[in-house]
Image 1 (cartoon, rainbow, N blue to C red):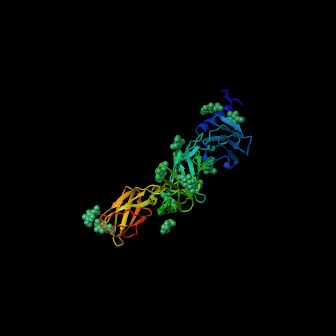
Image 2 (cartoon, helix red, strand yellow):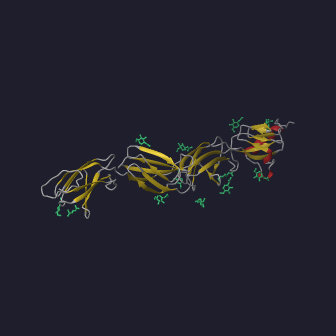
Image 3 (cartoon, protein in one colour):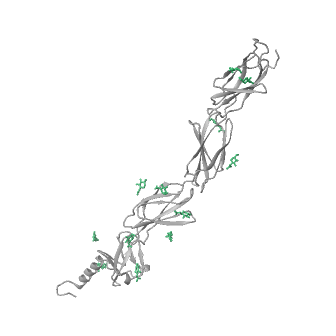
Length: 368
Ligand SMILES: *[C@@H]1O[C@H](CO)[C@@H](O)[C@H](O)[C@H]1NC(C)=O
Ligand SMILES: *[C@@H]1O[C@H](CO)[C@@H](O)[C@H](O)[C@H]1NC(C)=O
Ligand SMILES: *[C@@H]1O[C@H](CO)[C@@H](O)[C@H](O)[C@H]1NC(C)=O
Ligand SMILES: *[C@@H]1O[C@H](CO)[C@@H](O)[C@H](O)[C@H]1NC(C)=O
Ligand SMILES: *[C@@H]1O[C@H](CO)[C@@H](O)[C@H](O)[C@H]1NC(C)=O
Ligand SMILES: *[C@@H]1O[C@H](CO)[C@@H](O)[C@H](O)[C@H]1NC(C)=O
Ligand SMILES: *[C@@H]1O[C@H](CO)[C@@H](O)[C@H](O)[C@H]1NC(C)=O
Ligand SMILES: *[C@@H]1O[C@H](CO)[C@@H](O)[C@H](O)[C@H]1NC(C)=O
Ligand SMILES: *[C@@H]1O[C@H](CO)[C@@H](O)[C@H](O)[C@H]1NC(C)=O
Ligand SMILES: *[C@@H]1O[C@H](CO)[C@@H](O)[C@H](O)[C@H]1NC(C)=O
Ligand SMILES: *[C@@H]1O[C@H](CO)[C@@H](O)[C@H](O)[C@H]1NC(C)=O
Ligand SMILES: *[C@@H]1O[C@H](CO)[C@@H](O)[C@H](O)[C@H]1NC(C)=O
């Protein structure tokens, strides 16, 4: 059938249909087909119930289905067999490069890149395996807060199409929050070669503890599951800085370390000897102990009264003593803190009874 102008009626119909699409005039009150009869992917829309129906939008058309569409976009689809039109949204594409960019004890931040095609926002959902929460992000970034320390969360990010409803395929990533710091870290004992500590579990979750110790030069570490440790094989009289860090169940995610410092006890001095004695003085010397120490505490007593002094050299002349009295003299190595001391070594020595009579006598118990 031809009109007088020579323009075909079909062309006219097409023209008006295109005009209608361009003006986006699908009437939502007159949906021509149920959503359930449509299959939508990222780039295609298929009318499964009518494989021969001509579908078109703009300059794209096809029988039963149209392809090559933009993901996540809203289309005014003309269903020519039904002589009507409906707004249909394609599925958005997956987001790309989802990654964890920050972790704290209570937050995880993520970023990602826009999916191919269109999208209006992102639905972000996270779960600890029991409780699930969600939020909407309008940018390619989210900081999820109010999480529990040391817990594994699985986060999924789903692009939402231009219609603010249609969701794409989810992408997920898992991450443990950092465990909290351990509490009440304390030294419970120390010897010349070991230091013992204990502490209490941090708030939230954690599965093990990394214990690290250093003398300032060499660093060692080990992992324990209990809340105490005895570090052995240390050097005497040396200051160790020990840190304890809670580690999550992945064995990787660590919290903030807590530190404590302790000197091991210095060893006993070696070869303590009386080198000389008079009516009023006793001289002694000794050798440095194994390991470290910075000074020596020398203490002497006549059984009733006790005096002491501190020296840095390995000898001493104790004067102002009383003639013919037995003194017990002990020497103790002291660490660099001026406090931590080791085991004492003692000698017994009488001062001479008579003026100007000198004797050199090892452990003299003899009366002169
Ligand atoms: C038509 O479809 C749209 C979205 O698909 C829906 O919001 C609307 O309620 C439907 N209208 C009728 C009359 O079913
Ligand atoms: C359809 O039209 C768009 C512009 O509206 C154009 O970019 C595209 O190339 C056209 N596609 C075809 C298959 O003609
Ligand atoms: C579907 O209809 C449109 C407009 O009426 C037409 O341009 C197109 O060629 C048709 N497509 C098919 C596959 O029949
Ligand atoms: C995500 O964060 C990393 C590290 O900060 C950055 O290099 C990357 O460009 C970010 N990506 C996006 C999509 O923002
Ligand atoms: C998102 O969370 C809200 C409550 O905050 C809940 O009502 C809604 O069902 C959740 N949506 C999904 C898809 O889980
Ligand atoms: C996320 O939020 C928490 C709590 O407000 C904040 O401490 C943390 O620094 C934030 N992380 C980033 C990467 O902005
Ligand atoms: C944080 O989480 C707790 C328990 O899950 C909840 O009671 C509280 O309201 C949350 N706070 C915020 C600011 O979301
Ligand atoms: C989607 O949401 C945005 C922001 O809330 C709004 O501006 C836009 O009109 C909505 N689009 C549709 C199709 O509802
Ligand atoms: C740590 O050791 C001290 C002393 O041995 C003890 O009193 C305390 O209860 C211990 N604490 C823990 C958390 O084990
Ligand atoms: C103790 O330390 C020495 C050297 O620092 C090392 O050779 C030795 O194997 C260690 N012994 C133990 C039981 O760790
Ligand atoms: C301790 O020192 C005082 C003062 O120098 C002295 O009188 C006293 O005899 C000394 N006692 C001993 C046991 O050396
Ligand atoms: C010895 O004792 C006297 C009196 O007790 C005191 O004045 C003197 O300073 C002391 N000398 C030494 C070296 O301790």
